[in-house]
View (cartoon, rainbow, N blue to C red):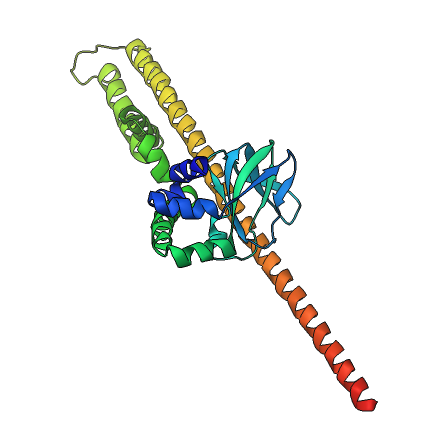
Length: 286
């Protein structure tokens, strides 16, 4: 009992409880062992229990409509599975499989509600913890799939990279072309035309050639730096698009599952009504 109480104290969901509340809760939990490779629960199964791992590791995943396995995460010792089922015993939204020999403590939904009758303050403690986790999850979803790729890159951009981007952008503008045309024309006019000015770079304009070569070298470097940053931005954009598409596929798969469940329930209900109608007809005829 003392070991279970200590595990509950380390679990985030029960962290706000006092010692007496944990003891009452521990008395209602049942130890269970699961072998490696064994399915703990499958997607669509009734969610009627919470599981606290004391040893081992469990993999949680879903399958898309194409049959692709998408791993949502792994639960290790000291972590929990199925805490939502304590308040909402609906269908499981994912499948959990033990990847190692696993030992766990199981708290059934009905047992939990019996505990609440003895210690109603437990519900407030758990709801407070779940509220914090829900806010953290909302923030994670907001930042993971709804980010602007330009904002992400901007946070990681250094001053030198911003300067390189500006130079690369400016070098491809009409203003840059016009400035170079005016500069070259002025340079050639001074050194070729009889304007009465000292000719500091006569034909074949060796100094101008060297300056233009240096300008071309530096501009090409800045353009390459900017292109590398654009490639990085494209990779981040691809990652964000993948995350959005993955979430959309999971939501669509869940909707398909719910529609199929409703269809099966309706078919079962219609079959039941049809049998009852036939029974009534037979009773009336006899």
